[in-house]
Length: 182
Image (cartoon, rainbow, N blue to C red):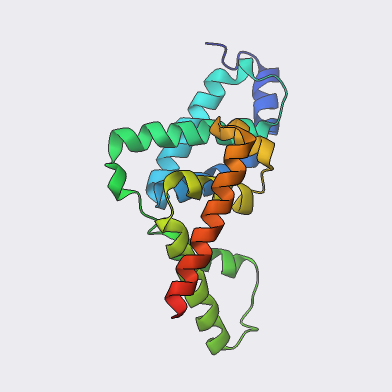
């Protein structure tokens, strides 16, 4: 294994990879559907990244780590869960925690907060219902902010496939939310 072999490599690993742990947890959370599984996935992904860091060629560290997280998530979920159990059940708690951290400070009315929570819950449910390939592309683009080329590298599909998956994911989201409003 290439691994991290020196103090310089450990320092470089910390500087290049560790700043992206939040993104790693977010992606793992969307793919796994709950915080506990996401933590297991990211822990295993970090171990894999640490062991393979000697082979990292100073490219985009964030995309490199997210690729490892994605691959780890699929292998972990394949070993630990049946595919039909891939649900997003912990996202309301994550949204509430993020809202508190962003300092809304109670400036919104209780009615506005209730409407925002309902809208966020409907959106999360609609995203959770997407096929995994569509959900993955949507999260990598709209939550993680990766560009099409980076998503193609992470998912190992052509850029055209990324674009198609994003378009289909967004169409399905719009249709699902429109159906909820009727």
